[in-house]
Image 1 (cartoon, helix red, strand yellow):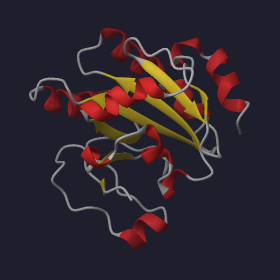
Image 2: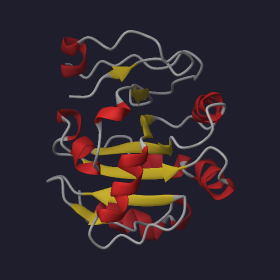
Image 3: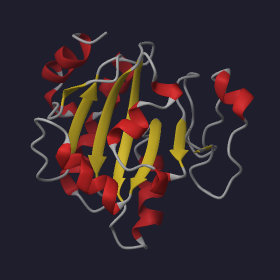
Image 4: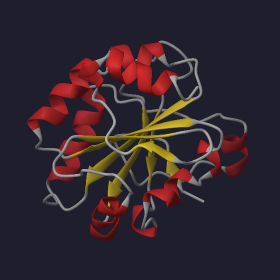
Length: 185
C-alpha cells in the first residue's frame, strides 16, 4: 500500500490516516484554489518501493478506475506545454472513474525537486504524483507494446488493471484521447 502525503509545498508531512483515505477524504495543497472536491494533489511518498507500473495499478485507491499515466521530466518543454492544455481533460473527467497519475523522472538533478513541486502547483496538476526510481523508469520499457523513447509519454490502464494503451494520446490531441478514455468507461 502506498503512503500518500497531503501537501505540495512540504513533502515531509505525516501520511494521511488510513481511515480518512478509505472514506475518500484527502486534504489537498493549500496553495491551490479548489473549485470542487475532486481537485486534490497527492504525493506517493514511498516511490522507491515501486518497481513496476503494476505496483501502482494494484493500489486499492485505483481499483475499478481508468488510469491515465503522464510520464514527464521537470525540464521537458513539451511536457510543460501539455500541462497548459490538460485543464480541458481534467474538466471532462472530473466526475468519472478516471484517475490521473503523474510520474516524474527522479533521475533529474536534486535541485529539480523544488521545480517539480513548483510546476505541480503552477499548472494545478490535480491527481497523484510520484518520482520514479531508476529501476521503475527502466521497467516501463518492458510494458508490452510500449514505444517509450522520450517524454512526455502517456499510458492508459482500464478498470481491470490492464494496460490497454501503452502509447496513449497526449492531452493536446483532445478528441483522440477522449475516445481512448471513453472506450474504457
